[in-house]
Amino acid sequence: MKSRAQLDADLDRLAAMLPPWLQHLRHEAQFWPQFEALALDILGDAADHDRDHVQLRLDAMLATHGKAAPGRDARGTSPQDGMR
Image (cartoon, rainbow, N blue to C red; front, side, top):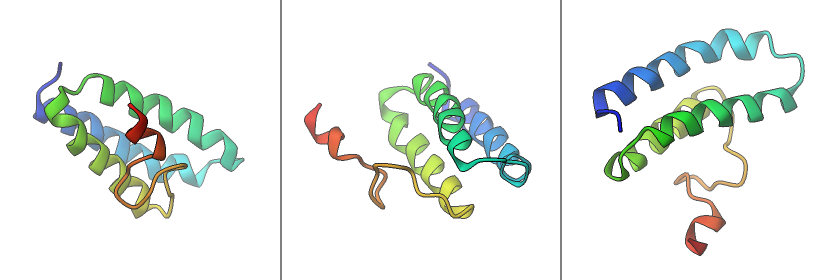
C-alpha cells in the first residue's frame, strides 16, 4: 500500500498527463480503457481507507476536463458497488 502522499503524487502525475493526452486523442473510445487502466493501478495501491479519496480525485480530474466516468453517478459510485 502507498501512503496518501504517494497516491496524491501519482494522481497529480495523471492529472498533468490529461490535457496533452486529450488534445491529441484521435478517438474518444481510446481514452477510457487507457484511463481506467491507470486509475485502477492507483486504486490498487490505495489502502481501504484511502480509496474514497482516490476515487474523488479521479472523478474531479475527469469533471475538470468534461468527462464523466462511465457507469458512475455524481458521487462516483456505480450501481454495481451496491452488489459487492
